[in-house]
Length: 312
Image 1 (cartoon, one colour):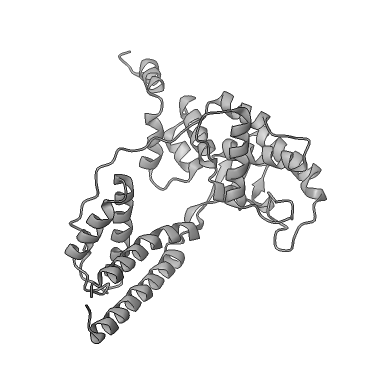
Image 2 (tube, one colour):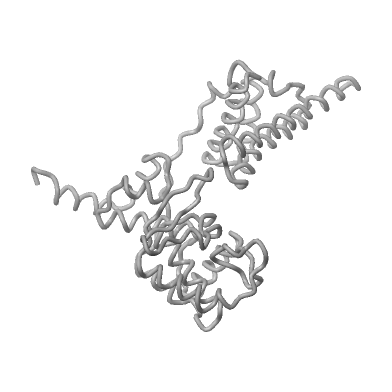
């Protein structure tokens, strides 16, 4: 049982944790330019730690907390989650304490000696070209949103976009004469992605036949894909559209907007596209992130060796 003075001290320390978290969130937003979804994900790890300290009545601040304290927190949490979740938790905490070291609040990172559990690299789910064609063909074009949905899925697959990049795409980002669209990715980093004639055609059909006749709400005049109320679509809406189409055709796969992006990269690689070019189009900061697609099709690698190796 804590004494009154210890309760007051614990309360003050919890407040210090919450203030440190607010500062960290500002750093992630302003310095690193992360999207709100990423900031929320990073924050969740710290919030779990704060709640744990409060429940266990552990009197330690962000400055004084030890490796042993954090190790015990991870151990207790590990009982409830899998290795991948443990690894993500450790990574999130390590990032937070690296920030405290960077700002000279701490001299050391208490996560330095804590190893993440070994996990295999999860290969992304992909669709075949036929499956993508079947999904898009299942769209009901008799409804106004049908043309929009076809244009959206063609853009997701044709340009390899993230769902957040799709919903934030602007009319002013379309450079059809040059054959490119401007995409704003993670950390507000912009890149130009080639767009094929098929995708251009479907976007133009949606713009001229549907979008031009809509009542667009103030502030969304430049947003390309709109909902029925003339506002920007949500991420959840894109997920729902795809889920309903997959159920409609009876496809027994877990398909999300990201599946179209993975399929874009995989199909390019299967058709002998350069890995570095795929990296630039996807907006991956590191080539190692793109290299995951190399593991998807072993038969393709065999063909490459047989075709290009000097001792074939």
